[in-house]
Image 1 (cartoon, helix red, strand yellow):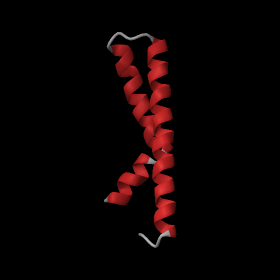
Image 2 (tube, one colour):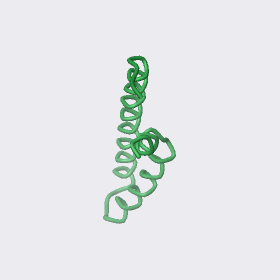
Image 3 (cartoon, one colour):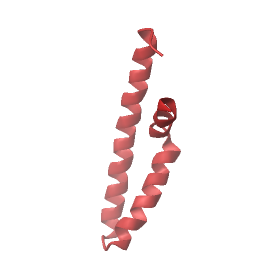
Image 4 (cartoon, one colour):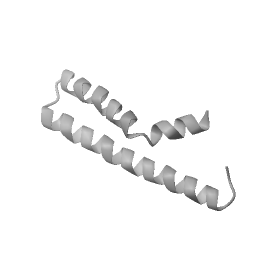
Amino acid sequence: MKSKIINKLTSRKFWVAVVGFVTPLVIAFGASETTATEIAGIIMSGASVIAYIIGEGLVDSKQNGGE
């Protein structure tokens, strides 16, 4: 179960799907396209940070004899 969650959080396809869901909602609630674009950028930037942190944690764990 844990590895499935990690795989999702590090998946670019997952984050593109999140952006694809959130962006139209933002526009539907009356925000401008510029605001929606900025929110999409923030989500993708956050996804990059999350993927990096998880990836580095997995590398460190394997180097230290973890699972």
